[in-house]
Image 1: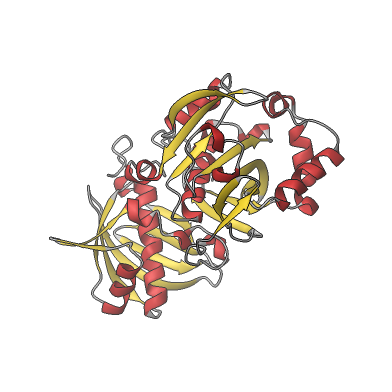
Image 2: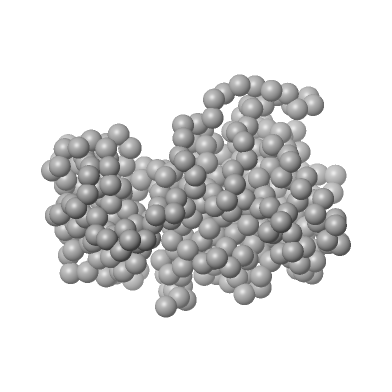
Length: 359
């Protein structure tokens, strides 16, 4: 539903960006009932929509200046802007152009209902091409392999470059994740690992050569994906995303083939505030669920005394499963279900109101 706390269900917005990871972002702006979608790189209009705000907004295609494929992309960009800016969980969609409608149906972002056609945000937010980098492909074929005594699916090749991008309206900035490299990211990682606040929990402080070996080892490990998080191109944090089946966590619970897990450090103190937390926290979960649609659960194993992180996980929809002992720490096993993340609309943090810091 629209944001009931702020009444922003009809607030104008400008410059909302979609499809950024693929390099040709679409920009949506709405005011006085008209929503325009433009090609941001060429600054050319793609389509215009009439929008009736309300408990369930109504989107109608008024004009299209492009073919059905691009018109469908424009409609999807408009729907992302409406559901994110206003917090709408459902949008009625009235598009008479049959080829465009057919594409929206095939992509699963618009479904028929008894009283018309509708976009459900829980479906839209699983449409990977809106956020993922590279060529969006079908899930990697299933074939099993052995790593030591662990039987698991063969994992896809590691991605390169930007893997995820999401416009954050309460910051008016873009959050991105890119695959870490030794060449470009070692200096930042080395500095962050030696930050006392980070070192207390990671226990990986040391010289640059240690961190070179550390990062290269993760890059070479098929089950680990090291990522650098940035806001508008400024790196501020580091994530390790892993397949749980091959990870050291697997013996401590019944790991499924496509369970994912993650570690995080926020290296830049200026990015440790609530406004940024509400940006990157749901975004990293979103990326893990989109990266392979077969992923149904995300797990974590924070130190049991890291009370702030456990509280953040709890607010983000993770359930506390149990305490258990790693060789190096006592940990809390936490778990987030795909159905809960999308079904309860955790893609949008409930406490995002009043967090705008950009201009």
